[in-house]
Image 1 (tube, rainbow, N blue to C red):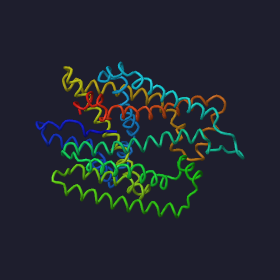
Image 2 (image 1 turned 120 degrees about the vertical axis):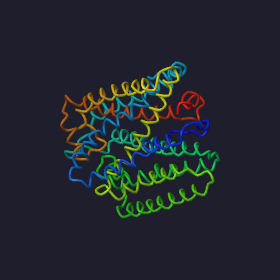
Image 3 (image 1 turned 30 degrees about the vertical axis):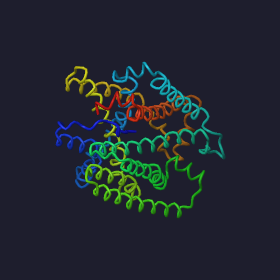
Image 4 (image 1 turned 135 degrees about the vertical axis):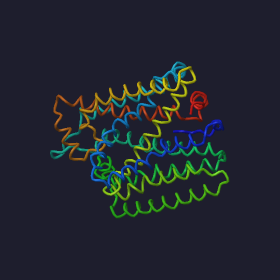
Length: 385
């Protein structure tokens, strides 16, 4: 979602070592986090520490989701935009959320007609729910990958159309083609994968050959992009490293999940979460400093607001996680719905609707915040990034 080609160049007064450390910590967390995971895996005391690390996963995920949602829908930075364009900044997010809640309630109220004692998971409601999430998911991740490459292209003053297009098409191919196919090939116990293979019965051997070909293509294209980058007089080393991170997403998933599933989760999910959270924090803290607050006060204010929202959402939803069907197996999904009876359907429906709604609203707000092709967004945000 980040498109920065029209933003002014960074200030030369910014110490390069400070910028490099910021990039290493926030833009490449998958690199050093994988190192931590690897070291912990080799020690006898590493397992409980590792479990403690991943116990924070949902908090980190919620912080990532609500960072952009807060900044666009509730922060002072976007107050004028909300007042001048209420449909874009209030009406559309509200419509997305209410539609998601309605879909979640319908899904729980009418789970499907029993077919020989089992629920029909090919229902159009399930397909609509899961498709809405996964299309948004892959699109959202792909735009962030392109956005990070754009940040480094901007820093390196790579302004040609070819530079931009090559990064964009590389991001599109990896996240909109390679990643979904490898995802469904590998994570074949999820409901969406089961529905996908029911609707499009594909021979397993054919899928394996296609997947192997895509992994080979990923390796070839990644190598080509890296070599092409080094041929530029103003090449960017961070871009080269990020090409490797992008290539690692499908490669680690393809050779997992048993052996590399943990590393895939860190490189794919945690990297995405850290990057977005850090960029939003940088924008909001710099904005608050621009209106007279000191750095410490701005940081405390940002953390306090997000922490309050995240804790409230976590406390209000954690008891209903069993109703989350995105990662449930077919059998587990049936068990959950059959156990609801006549009394509990609305609880599951509200949770499923809330989960879908918060995700889709987050995707939309991310686009509102980082679409720098829009002059209004560029004027509002670019100077603080």
